[in-house]
Amino acid sequence: MGPGPAAAPPIPQQNGMVGRVIRTLKKQCIHRHCFGSIRHAARVIGDWIGFCNNRSALPGACHAHACRGLQISSIN
Image 1 (cartoon, rainbow, N blue to C red):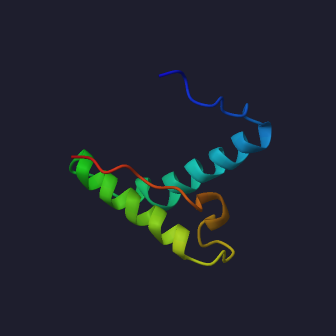
Image 2: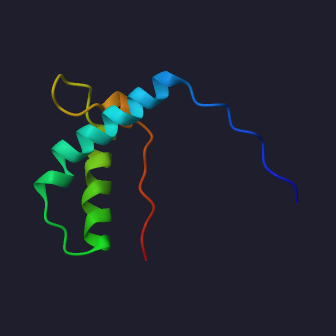
């Protein structure tokens, strides 16, 4: 089995979008919680991502356009 298809090289605009999502995640989710475990953190962050993916893009809500399609892997 050979390597999969090559991914397109990243472009600078993607770095900005990813940086914005991470800053928003920290501000609106991570800095507002005290996580007791990795499982708890994964659930809360997954809930936040779900909220962003299902919320219309309202000014100041969260950057739903940048979060669209994000998922968090389940931790067992």
